[in-house]
Image (tube, rainbow, N blue to C red; front, side, top):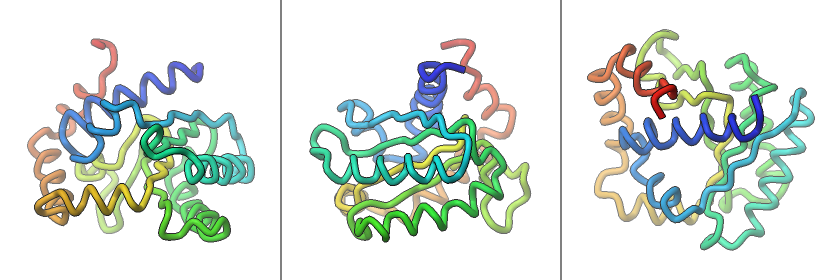
Amino acid sequence: MTEEQVIARTRHWLERAVIGLNLCPFAKAVHVRGQIRWVVSAATTTEALLQNLRAELQWLAQADPAAVDTTLLIHPHVLTDFLDFNDFLDDAEAAVAELGLEGVLQVASFHPDYRFAGTEAEDIANATNRSPYPTLHLLREASIERAVAAFPAPEAIYEANIATLRRLGPQGWARLMDDTDS
């Protein structure tokens, strides 16, 4: 797939699932304002991805938040196995710390085979963090704090998401993610 196709498919997921199902009530505003940086990594090794991640963390930390509030670092060629991806998250957190960006930026994770601890692989609740490709979401801590402060019950988001996905079911999720109609 081309970089444009990877971004288009990821954007489809963001618009249909994340925003469409309101899985993240904070995503719509940055999307509508065009404040998302879409980056497709060509990395084929974890070392190369870690270099890309460090570069993107530094880039986002320096960027004007009014222009770019968040980055989606999509990496379709590396860490396609969820357990390897999950292990890499420790390296991602270490990179944030090494760059002195703790309290400034954080990394959220999305993967096609995302699985929460204690759940079965096919549990539809895992879809809250399932994206078309392995993706590292770089977020500004200040933006998260503002969004959470403005949201009446942020702790209820996770439970509402699970309820939404259980109502939707696996077939509904598959139809939602079908990008042949868009």
